[in-house]
Image (cartoon, rainbow, N blue to C red):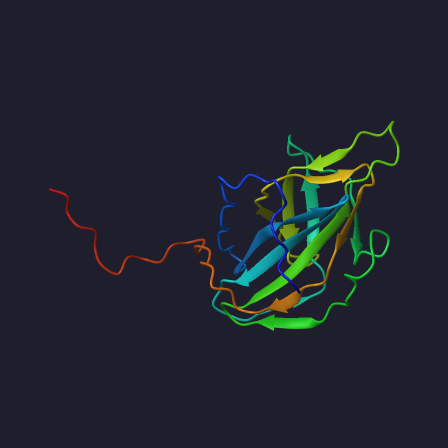
Length: 184
């Protein structure tokens, strides 16, 4: 899977904040959006930030929310067949050792097919590693602009090569190794 470059023209002043390691031992972040002629693709990165192996098999389970935090009705499609070609590799079993990563992608078209139906913009995204596991908020650097199609394609998780980027902070910070200095 290739890394998806940031959305052209997107603000770069504030980078997407790093995810915090969940109690489940994973952190999921957005890798940016690539947009061309109405077709959009956004990369997701899942880091095993826990202390034991983490198994994935399948597709991320996603929920979009509007600016008020209300869920948006979206038809989530494994793969992307009704949206575009490619992107349809079947899921495989992946076991990530601590520190290893997996990637997936979301794909959609900013397409308005009916002028009487308002276009949809998802401004909040919750992602569960797979259906049935807890979902976690993923910071977005811009909206997921579905037009009025209501369709969002999701690729299966694939193992990623190690990245030199920083790792998320644990949900519970480790105890200090030295006592704090006395400011008196």
